[in-house]
Image (cartoon, rainbow, N blue to C red; front, side, top):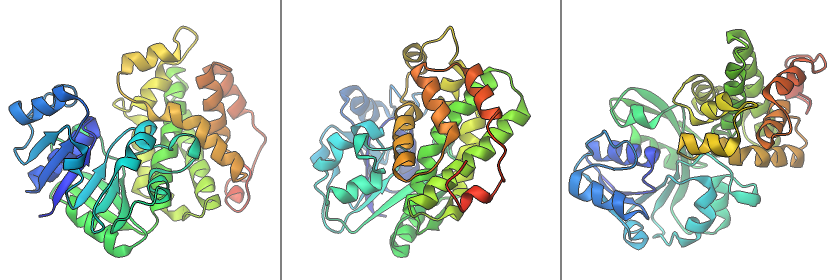
Length: 336
């Protein structure tokens, strides 16, 4: 089994690191927090994330990024907001494979994580992304799930899929990493809208319609950016979208659910306690939409909601009263 490093030991990083250790891999987890490193190495426990789980002995933690970068596979599991700080420090060997498990856009660059890593010119054997409908709480206790490993190279995608596949985690392959990344990015924005929809008690029918039209927006953006629209109908698109929009464990849905005239966004984020990627992602998705001339009305209204420009009630009214459209015509055009 290859030696693997997981860069970032939050909920998802801890879950993936433990999953790989359970498979028999030697895993080094990197964190900047001494409390986490000490907890994992001394007590087999991450005191801040998934603290109820006893972690496998094949996982050890370190404060040294240089030490973590010595391994053959580097799995990056960080908030998108800190990638610009960490990625330029990834001095890896040329035979190393870098896997992104990040769902966000890297700052004002408007680049996906893999696009950003590629732009940084890090010499390595290959880049891949791992994404799909999978909560950390399920993976860490080995509940069944299905995800996608995507890379431009079929060989790299297959190697990553084999690495993460287990009796409980089924990993499919794809050669459309951009489509897989975009699914994981835009679904967080739609999930905020779905949460607001449920907060208004608009019902199951409204939520189903919102999810479906959100998928259409994801597909239009993916097509405009050169990805395959079919990818968005799979696990990393529709699958992740449905899960994030309907499950109470979704931080993005929870943020939307709490938005209203009596709750301010900073207070909501403080209560949630973990990164809500959709909040940072929303304005950048709109920038991408404008750049590629794609109409994304749901994402636009989520931006107005998050900025306090509109209330959930106003947003719902605007979306429902939009002009009548042909359902599938916009996939060949740019309209919504």
